[in-house]
Amino acid sequence: MKCRCTSDCAAGHFCSNVDGIKQCMRASEVGGRCRDDEVCVGNALCHFERVSDLSGKCVEFLSLKSRTDLKIILKIKGIDVSSVADIENLLCESGYVDMSGRCAVPTRKAINKGGLCHSDNDCSTTTTEPGNCVASLTESAKYCAPLEADDEWQDAFKAFAEYYRAAKKELRYSKWHPHAHEELYRRMKCAVYKAFYYALRLDYERSDEMTKKRLRSIPVLEWMLTEC
Image 1 (tube, rainbow, N blue to C red):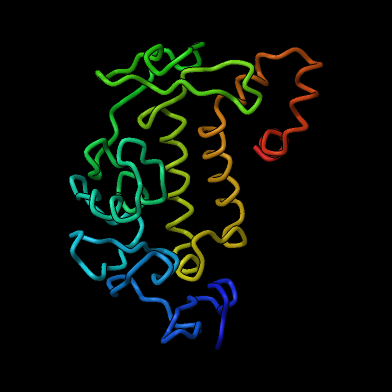
Image 2 (spheres, rainbow, N blue to C red):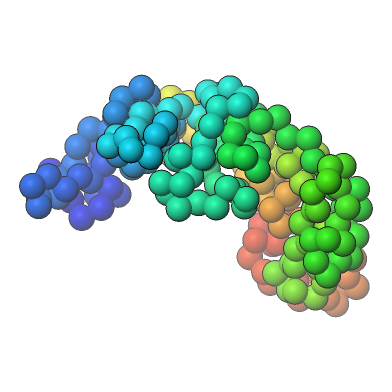
Protein backbone atom coordinates (compact mmCIF):
# COMPACT_ATOMS: atom_id res chain seq x y z
CA MET A 1 0.00 0.00 0.00
CA LYS A 2 1.34 3.43 -0.95
CA CYS A 3 1.57 6.13 1.74
CA ARG A 4 2.65 9.67 2.50
CA CYS A 5 3.37 9.12 6.21
CA THR A 6 3.06 6.34 8.79
CA SER A 7 -0.43 7.48 9.85
CA ASP A 8 -1.63 6.36 6.38
CA CYS A 9 -0.61 2.77 7.19
CA ALA A 10 -2.42 0.04 9.10
CA ALA A 11 -1.54 -0.64 12.76
CA GLY A 12 1.83 -2.36 13.13
CA HIS A 13 3.16 -0.86 9.88
CA PHE A 14 5.19 2.23 8.96
CA CYS A 15 5.68 4.30 5.81
CA SER A 16 9.00 3.41 4.16
CA ASN A 17 10.74 4.92 1.15
CA VAL A 18 11.65 1.97 -1.09
CA ASP A 19 13.50 2.91 -4.28
CA GLY A 20 11.86 6.33 -4.25
CA ILE A 21 8.36 4.93 -3.72
CA LYS A 22 6.70 5.32 -0.31
CA GLN A 23 4.84 2.23 0.78
CA CYS A 24 3.62 0.66 4.03
CA MET A 25 5.90 -1.96 5.55
CA ARG A 26 5.51 -4.16 8.62
CA ALA A 27 7.23 -2.68 11.69
CA SER A 28 10.18 -4.50 13.28
CA GLU A 29 9.43 -6.47 16.45
CA VAL A 30 11.41 -6.08 19.69
CA GLY A 31 14.95 -7.30 18.95
CA GLY A 32 14.60 -6.59 15.23
CA ARG A 33 16.85 -4.27 13.22
CA CYS A 34 15.92 -0.62 12.66
CA ARG A 35 17.23 2.71 11.47
CA ASP A 36 14.89 4.96 13.48
CA ASP A 37 12.04 4.74 16.02
CA GLU A 38 9.33 4.71 13.35
CA VAL A 39 10.55 1.34 12.08
CA CYS A 40 9.91 -0.33 15.47
CA VAL A 41 6.61 -1.58 16.87
CA GLY A 42 4.86 0.87 19.18
CA ASN A 43 6.28 -0.44 22.46
CA ALA A 44 9.92 -0.08 21.38
CA LEU A 45 12.49 2.48 20.24
CA CYS A 46 15.50 2.11 17.95
CA HIS A 47 18.66 1.81 20.07
CA PHE A 48 22.20 2.18 18.63
CA GLU A 49 25.26 0.93 20.50
CA ARG A 50 27.89 2.68 18.33
CA VAL A 51 27.80 5.83 16.22
CA SER A 52 29.30 3.84 13.33
CA ASP A 53 26.40 1.34 13.34
CA LEU A 54 24.32 1.47 10.17
CA SER A 55 21.33 0.04 12.00
CA GLY A 56 20.14 -0.32 15.58
CA LYS A 57 17.95 -2.76 17.49
CA CYS A 58 14.33 -2.27 18.56
CA VAL A 59 14.41 -2.16 22.37
CA GLU A 60 11.29 -2.47 24.51
CA PHE A 61 10.22 0.19 27.01
CA LEU A 62 11.31 -0.39 30.64
CA SER A 63 13.81 -3.08 29.64
CA LEU A 64 17.28 -1.51 30.06
CA LYS A 65 19.16 -2.01 33.32
CA SER A 66 20.92 0.74 35.27
CA ARG A 67 24.27 1.82 33.79
CA THR A 68 23.14 0.98 30.23
CA ASP A 69 24.68 3.70 28.06
CA LEU A 70 22.22 5.76 25.99
CA LYS A 71 24.70 8.48 24.91
CA ILE A 72 24.97 7.04 21.40
CA ILE A 73 21.24 6.98 20.65
CA LEU A 74 20.89 10.48 22.09
CA LYS A 75 23.82 11.78 20.01
CA ILE A 76 22.44 10.25 16.82
CA LYS A 77 19.06 11.89 17.47
CA GLY A 78 20.65 15.23 18.36
CA ILE A 79 19.34 15.21 21.95
CA ASP A 80 21.38 17.09 24.57
CA VAL A 81 22.22 14.63 27.37
CA SER A 82 22.28 17.49 29.89
CA SER A 83 18.59 18.17 29.33
CA VAL A 84 17.16 14.75 28.54
CA ALA A 85 13.43 14.69 29.21
CA ASP A 86 12.50 12.61 26.23
CA ILE A 87 10.78 9.32 25.52
CA GLU A 88 14.22 7.62 25.52
CA ASN A 89 14.06 7.73 29.34
CA LEU A 90 11.30 5.15 29.17
CA LEU A 91 13.65 2.53 27.75
CA CYS A 92 15.22 2.37 31.22
CA GLU A 93 13.71 0.23 33.97
CA SER A 94 14.02 3.28 36.23
CA GLY A 95 12.55 5.71 33.68
CA TYR A 96 15.56 7.99 34.14
CA VAL A 97 18.75 8.88 32.22
CA ASP A 98 21.48 10.59 34.27
CA MET A 99 23.80 13.43 33.25
CA SER A 100 26.32 10.96 31.83
CA GLY A 101 23.70 9.54 29.46
CA ARG A 102 23.17 6.22 31.28
CA CYS A 103 20.10 4.57 32.74
CA ALA A 104 20.17 5.18 36.50
CA VAL A 105 18.08 5.29 39.65
CA PRO A 106 17.27 8.97 40.31
CA THR A 107 18.45 10.49 43.59
CA ARG A 108 18.17 14.27 43.11
CA LYS A 109 15.31 15.95 45.01
CA ALA A 110 14.35 19.60 45.35
CA ILE A 111 14.91 21.04 48.84
CA ASN A 112 12.85 24.19 48.32
CA LYS A 113 10.24 22.79 45.91
CA GLY A 114 7.59 25.42 45.17
CA GLY A 115 9.78 28.29 46.35
CA LEU A 116 10.10 31.44 44.25
CA CYS A 117 13.25 31.73 42.14
CA HIS A 118 14.99 33.73 39.42
CA SER A 119 17.38 31.06 38.15
CA ASP A 120 18.28 27.39 38.65
CA ASN A 121 20.94 28.41 41.18
CA ASP A 122 18.16 29.61 43.51
CA CYS A 123 16.83 26.05 43.73
CA SER A 124 18.71 23.88 46.22
CA THR A 125 18.78 20.10 45.84
CA THR A 126 19.94 17.01 47.71
CA THR A 127 22.98 16.82 45.38
CA THR A 128 25.63 19.30 44.27
CA GLU A 129 23.65 20.05 41.11
CA PRO A 130 21.22 23.00 41.07
CA GLY A 131 17.51 22.42 40.59
CA ASN A 132 15.11 23.67 37.93
CA CYS A 133 13.61 27.17 38.11
CA VAL A 134 10.57 27.15 35.84
CA ALA A 135 7.90 29.65 34.83
CA SER A 136 4.24 28.75 34.56
CA LEU A 137 2.30 29.26 31.33
CA THR A 138 1.15 32.60 32.74
CA GLU A 139 4.77 33.59 33.53
CA SER A 140 3.51 35.49 36.58
CA ALA A 141 6.23 33.90 38.72
CA LYS A 142 9.00 31.32 38.62
CA TYR A 143 9.12 28.37 41.00
CA CYS A 144 11.60 25.66 41.98
CA ALA A 145 10.16 22.59 40.28
CA PRO A 146 10.06 18.97 41.48
CA LEU A 147 13.00 16.89 40.29
CA GLU A 148 13.36 13.33 39.04
CA ALA A 149 13.40 11.69 42.50
CA ASP A 150 10.57 13.84 43.90
CA ASP A 151 7.13 12.35 44.41
CA GLU A 152 5.57 14.15 41.43
CA TRP A 153 7.88 12.62 38.81
CA GLN A 154 8.08 9.27 40.58
CA ASP A 155 4.27 9.12 40.63
CA ALA A 156 4.25 9.94 36.89
CA PHE A 157 6.72 7.15 36.13
CA LYS A 158 4.87 4.61 38.28
CA ALA A 159 1.60 5.54 36.54
CA PHE A 160 3.24 5.06 33.14
CA ALA A 161 4.71 1.69 34.17
CA GLU A 162 1.31 0.50 35.45
CA TYR A 163 -0.43 1.63 32.26
CA TYR A 164 2.29 0.19 30.02
CA ARG A 165 2.21 -3.27 31.59
CA ALA A 166 -1.59 -3.38 31.30
CA ALA A 167 -1.75 -2.02 27.74
CA LYS A 168 1.46 -3.60 26.42
CA LYS A 169 -0.31 -5.63 23.74
CA GLU A 170 -2.19 -2.63 22.33
CA LEU A 171 0.91 -0.43 22.48
CA ARG A 172 2.69 -2.70 20.01
CA TYR A 173 0.61 -0.92 17.37
CA SER A 174 0.63 2.62 18.74
CA LYS A 175 3.06 4.56 20.97
CA TRP A 176 0.13 5.90 23.00
CA HIS A 177 -3.29 4.28 22.97
CA PRO A 178 -5.84 6.30 25.04
CA HIS A 179 -8.63 3.82 24.31
CA ALA A 180 -6.71 0.91 25.82
CA HIS A 181 -7.32 0.72 29.59
CA GLU A 182 -8.83 4.21 29.66
CA GLU A 183 -8.78 4.65 33.44
CA LEU A 184 -5.09 3.76 33.68
CA TYR A 185 -4.37 6.08 30.75
CA ARG A 186 -6.24 8.93 32.50
CA ARG A 187 -4.30 8.32 35.73
CA MET A 188 -1.01 8.34 33.81
CA LYS A 189 -1.89 11.55 31.98
CA CYS A 190 -2.95 13.21 35.25
CA ALA A 191 0.29 12.22 36.99
CA VAL A 192 2.46 13.44 34.09
CA TYR A 193 0.56 16.74 33.84
CA LYS A 194 0.78 17.35 37.60
CA ALA A 195 4.55 17.03 37.41
CA PHE A 196 5.08 18.82 34.09
CA TYR A 197 2.67 21.70 34.83
CA TYR A 198 3.67 22.02 38.48
CA ALA A 199 4.27 25.79 38.23
CA LEU A 200 0.91 26.39 36.59
CA ARG A 201 -0.85 24.47 39.36
CA LEU A 202 0.94 26.59 41.96
CA ASP A 203 -0.15 29.77 40.19
CA TYR A 204 -3.75 28.56 40.37
CA GLU A 205 -3.62 27.40 43.98
CA ARG A 206 -2.06 30.69 45.15
CA SER A 207 -4.39 32.98 43.20
CA ASP A 208 -7.53 34.84 44.27
CA GLU A 209 -10.91 33.72 42.94
CA MET A 210 -10.98 36.24 40.08
CA THR A 211 -7.57 35.13 38.84
CA LYS A 212 -8.52 31.47 39.23
CA LYS A 213 -11.53 32.04 36.97
CA ARG A 214 -9.25 33.58 34.33
CA LEU A 215 -6.69 30.79 34.61
CA ARG A 216 -9.34 28.15 34.04
CA SER A 217 -9.49 29.34 30.42
CA ILE A 218 -6.13 27.60 29.90
CA PRO A 219 -7.15 24.23 28.36
CA VAL A 220 -4.54 22.06 30.09
CA LEU A 221 -5.41 23.50 33.52
CA GLU A 222 -9.14 23.10 32.92
CA TRP A 223 -8.52 19.47 31.94
CA MET A 224 -6.51 18.79 35.11
CA LEU A 225 -9.10 20.44 37.35
CA THR A 226 -11.89 18.44 35.69
CA GLU A 227 -10.24 15.04 35.20
CA CYS A 228 -7.72 14.80 38.03
